[in-house]
Amino acid sequence: MSREFLWYIPNTLEPGHRGDFTEDTWGSLDFSVEQALLLERHGWGGALLGTSWGRPDTFTVATALAARTTTFVPLIAIRPGYWTPAHFASAAATLYHLSGGRVYVNIVSGLDDLDAYGDGEFDPSRRYDRTREFLHTVRRLWAEADVTEAGEFWPVRNSTVVPRLSGGHPRLYFGGASAAAEAVAAAEADVQLFWGEPLDGIAERIDRLTALQDKLGREHPPLEYGLRITTFVRDTTEEAWRDAEAKVRQLADRLDPRWAAGQRRSVGQRRLIDLQARGEVLDTNLYTTPGKVGGGGAGTTWLVGTAAEVAAALQRYAGLGITHFVLSDTPYKQEIVRQGEQLLPLLRTAPEAS
Image (tube, rainbow, N blue to C red; front, side, top):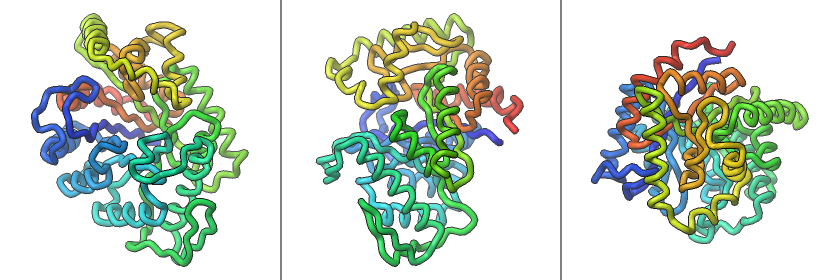
């Protein structure tokens, strides 16, 4: 099975995301297009575009980037509740058709500023039930005409999406570490994305998800697995750890006192924060300290080292069955080039899983 290497475009109007204050054009189309073109030139397949209320609309940005590039694939983060299944299926099918198939989708179920856009479903278990229905209905709308679905959340009747998709559909990524989230992934996702847990945690989750697919009677090709993590690469081991520790100190100096209160809302984030009790460095070079000083999500843990050391760590994840990698570090544009030139060749020349 071939491996895929994506990056991350933050999709914010203001500079400063994960410490990147390098540009005065942040948030402009030219700023994001420049990153997408750099990704094409330096061997990346595309990039995840972040989403939340208060950022530019992710699907609009992705459409603009697809129009200004030739091979770049946006991994578009979207939220059920912000979208209905039929509306989203139509929009994604349109972009898939116009771009020649360059659409990946990252489904996000976690809480956001729901009141701001009229989403009244706050109960986490209900949100995952709703997400499963969303994915099931979207898949039907992409594959069938005159779809009638008596859904609990979004019933549709005699619905046909135009343009029609034949021979493929946008790949569906999904994250989440709770039992409810894993049931959604095992039933309806194409790729389960993990954050940067140690190898033993990832292996245990892959085993559980593999068994869960059989238990739930999955109707689609087997679930694939991906890793979303920060990769901190320097020319020497000593330089990497010195710079990583300096960056942690900078994050600590800018830490918002309110930040910690929101860091244990999701099961996946709690799993990352709890790693700090096991040590500052796990496995060979998984750095947990960023999660104490403002690193959230994919920035909670970092793989630190030379390109060869970080590549070796990623290869160990690949040995567990990970085939999709969404990497990043800041400054974003500088690291697209550095890691595209130093890290990706080591990953692409390694044997791939059969």
